[in-house]
Length: 113
Length: 111
Image (cartoon, rainbow over all chains, first blue to last red; front, top):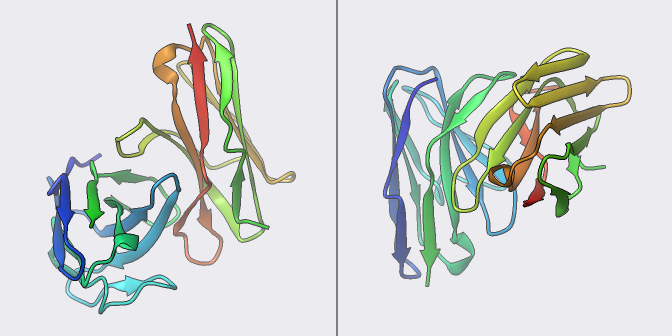
């Protein structure tokens, strides 16, 4: 499987600000995904990052709040906009394909004060 | 019914015992099932994939899939304290193929 890195690994942010999380894969991958894991909870898919087109968002997640870029087959960013304490979570990117395995990056632990 | 259900635990077993982790799923989930291990403060790590009925073994781990009963399990033989973690069961959505995760079961292996 590809090696996935994320930056930053953690951050503490003030309410109302935005944070951009980067996800880098060491080889070209077709699909990249962004997940959120709230404290004590399981993983929830935010969106599928599509190369060259807009991301596909899951129910309950919108582009204005979580804009995503995917400029090429090895890189994606997720921005958490106008943050509130409820956005405090671990944000994870993964690669894989539908119906098959996905592999996760190390995650970004976000705390919003 | 939740799409993928797990007992949150904790499941406590003594070192050397067999740990049995269970997962049930709804009609909205099919085809592919996965077990991930997540240590506290870390990201999920894939440990087993299973696509067809029956057992699949990999080292100390055995995944079992019963599609008729909509049931997936993970057996860990000779449990070690290092196996203490949260185990996430995931299945692919029948419609979209996207992964749907259960809530996870916390396993504690006591020396």
